[in-house]
Image (tube, rainbow, N blue to C red; front, side, top):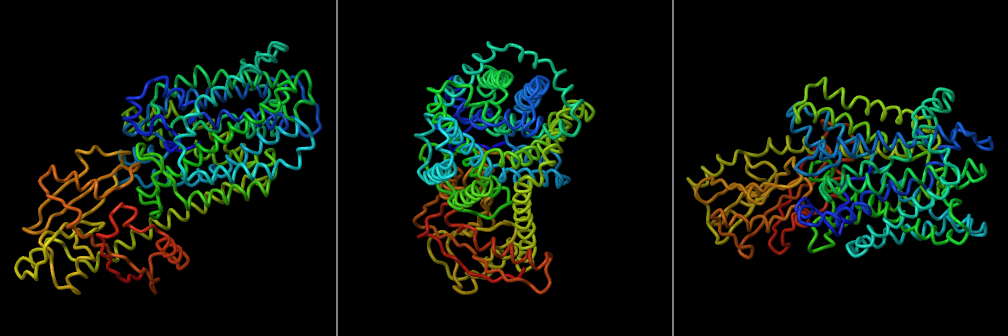
Length: 637
């Protein structure tokens, strides 16, 4: 489900950290970060599945319980274990995972014909934001609802207390989460132990539920329940929400620790707990009201509510920081405008905080809590975003297996089509809940897709328009060397998106100041289609005439560009760089809608609005503000 959650991993934030940290530390860290979301599914998944199958007020039969338990177990084995743990963890982009990393990998393999893959990446990224808003609301609500089991008097305090916890969670994001993260692994391990212990106790009282390991019961349930069985699949899918995190956090913990944690700790604990809930409901059908908390004795209820609340906060934390990471990747890949990124750790580059993203997520989460007011109502909205992302992941995986792994297309299809069919089945079953809340993530995803598409299309049109006003750099340099203007000491760095043409800031500087620095650098910052770029490949310098140089800085799509730090690397290549004698010239464009444009008028206005909200290039590229000169230009689009 989630995208990279490096910002909450105090143990490891990049591939290098993963290689040097101990295997056991990484395994413990992955239990806290990677499995926080899927680990809280027992709070609501079995309850929603049984209610969907039996209907409100109808008797819960043995066939229903065994059928749903069988579907749950085989969903965990096929979707999570086979698809993600055994296959997709091998499809890494220089050690990194996640849908945008997979998109970059597939698009690099396809070259110019990668438009469809980029569209898939945009769809998955857009759907993730819907997921990022639903997860904190659903998880925390379901945990706090346990208070109603302790005493019905708490019922009226569930929503207000949920709001307080969520506001506090989003409020502390700006402080960074490294200190809290050290507790995530051990606390989540205690959570999984509590799941297993309660499950074992109830299984021992009714071992009949062990028959659910036989897939016959799941298939029999689907065959004999028709549309009800298909509808129930949408609720069963709740048990695998969070499995995208396995792939997304590959670069932060490594393939080995993630696999070991799943196979040895998480999968057994989840399976045992679901079986235990099933055994409880078979013994007491009324327990379906809240089978998770009713598994525990009265004295353990309040501690379990507190532990569940902590576990859901961890799950929410993972998806919030995942939204930061996804947004940074989208910015680097040209899908969103520049937004403010604050680093909350001097040691770990992956620990970031994005104020605008944080505020938008908080507003969305609180609106959901206010609208739905219960985890059961909210569960209907949950599956569509996640299933959509899984379908997209399976499609892109076929491309990677065929083009990157060089498997024959027939073999790639034979491997992934069964999983794609399962994902599509879950997607269609979740679409049946469209009018019960499923419209929400689709509507939000559609808005994000329009924003991403508008920004990408508008940026290309802007480049095409400004290029008509620019002249080739070599032509300008040749002209200046024949008739040199007055020179001033120091170095001038002109930022541009296209190093082949003279930057607008340079042209306006010559027009208004009629002087030229002793040394002039035409600087371009490129985003590679790999997560990170080796320092040795960071800088490329090419002389253009006697006083001009063309410098290209390359950053991975998961890296935060730092221009001064990267230029310091250029000293090893012979360029003497002194930040205090260097001026950076940036062009600030004022956009106006043109009478005739390549986009509809509403899209023009949206692109102009997005460009106005974009973070200043000075801050984004971490250039000292005292060394920056901005030149304003007006462009119609």
